[in-house]
Amino acid sequence: MSNNPTGAAPHRPESMVWIDGELVPKSRATVSVYDHGLLYGDGVFEGIRAYGGRILKLATHLERMWQSAESIRMRPPYTKDEIARAIRATIEANRLPDGYIRLVFTRGAGNLGLDPRKCPRPCAIVIVDTIQLYPPEMYRKGMRIIVAKRPRIPVECLDPSIKSLNYLNNILAKLEAVDADVFEAIMLNTDGHVAECTGDNIFGVKGNTVYTPPVEAGLLNGVTRRYVMQELAPALGYEVRERMMRLEDLLAMDEIFLTGTAAEIIGVSAVGDRTIGAGETGPVTTAIAAEFRRRMAAGAPED
Image (cartoon, rainbow, N blue to C red):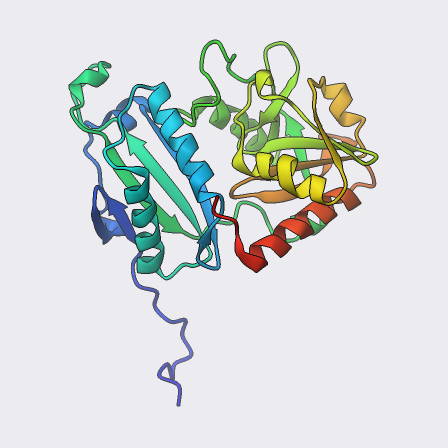
């Protein structure tokens, strides 16, 4: 007999968040208002996915997290192994074997000045929850995006390899997408070359060749981006090339697709009023996305 005779949706326990060695309910997961992560965006983060309890590219994500921390002269308060255990414990506590993981290091509590030396200890946070960036039908039909007027911050001003808490440049471009009633926007660098989207890396397809901008264009070297370039596309027989692209180069592609930890792999049907290919997710994108899903079902690689 059912123990839920009313037919109401079962109550899900409150999410648990790991903060500095302790799992606490989401409603009590707080940081100081003097934390420089809040006051100045002084910190770094990673977005990670778990599939069937296996954490996709965990070692790669942690390596990039430590590189980001080193770039801002932050000494993480835990080892990589300790953070890996914290992530697994938070997944288990939330009973979310298929979930989105947000790992955050903030500079920690200090004073109202910029000086990071006034923050004696960084704060470490692990959040595990569900996430859905785009409607499911867009993965079949493709999505329309726009080109933002807001350029990407030059590499000389803020190195995009640092996955920092300061995302205002991306958010301002995202607001242009919101105003256009779409989900994403292409960001060009100040020289007019394609860099990335507000939260995703971008690829173009011409024939059997997959193209993507190099990191020198001013983009985050995404983990899913590298997975597509180094493993998925080559396994399917596609050549992958990095090249600087003007917008007109990208628009001339047969297909365009986006990649990201949360987005996974999604096709682009149009850029503004310009239809891409047949105006739906193309065959190469479909094949790469299917291979991604097959590998996740078989067991996400954690290296």
